[in-house]
Length: 151
Image (cartoon, rainbow, N blue to C red; front, side, top):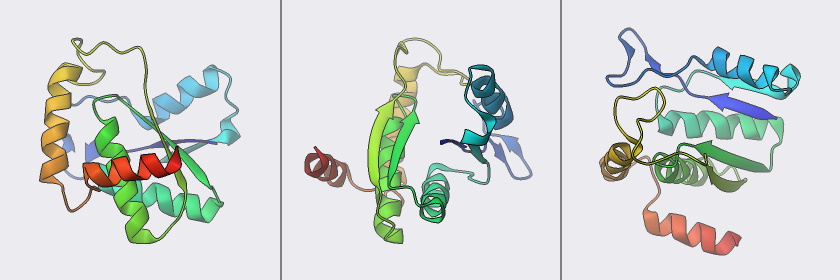
């Protein structure tokens, strides 16, 4: 199964400043055209932020009986996404194996897709967000410890 998750439209105010992501339906159409059977694609579009995304995806994993989640995101966002899933997993007591897989072949000095900043600029923003949203993300040390125990 492939789960496309997220929602770049904030309720009542539209897209976030500096973001112009593709709608999730367009991503689904791309996967279907690439040969993925439509019945193997799920869309979760209720998440308005990474913490909600982690919670919603883990709830769906429990419902579907999934034992492993491969978290795919942009390289700059991957650490916070992973730490958000790890925190949500600990809070919910839903046990799955988390595999961290950033998207590949993306240059740091180029503008990120749907963004008005380079991936390197966004990396700096993400480091700040890990601190800013510390209630919703596991600590970097918790992430390292999790990965050490899974390898």
